Image (tube, rainbow, N blue to C red):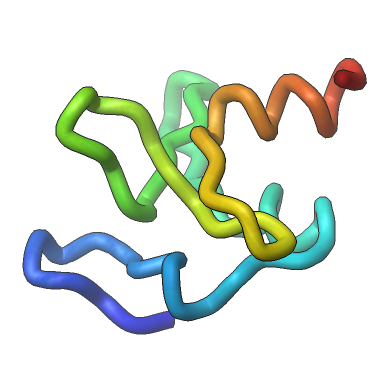
Length: 68
């Protein structure tokens, strides 16, 4: 994965296509928290390109885990 100027993974170029690709990108810390190492918008939310659309990761995680 390419790294951007903030030292974070750039997902705009490498589009994620499957749930396994999405879930594998998280880093888990010692407290059980899932850390997003990818692009973070100016509003503080993680962003990713998912099947051709830019989405916030918290919304995508919810939809993949619970449903739309």
